[in-house]
Length: 76
Image (cartoon, rainbow, N blue to C red; front, side):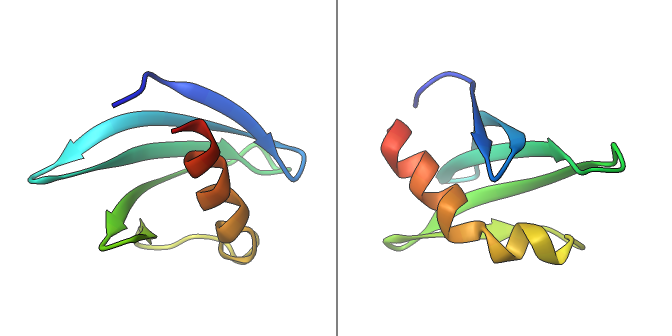
């Protein structure tokens, strides 16, 4: 798996750190919002699609998840 990378998506800096989940690989992701609150979540591949795994995330992250997934695919 590739090393840590950062990418600005919709004016926010996302940090992607590769991780292994049991038998699956994915990314630990963190990003700060306009109030400087840091949000952390995991993304893993479910079959041939990426999936976000998190307890509570703000709506703006869910709204741009396809752009987040595309960023990962472009990086890999």
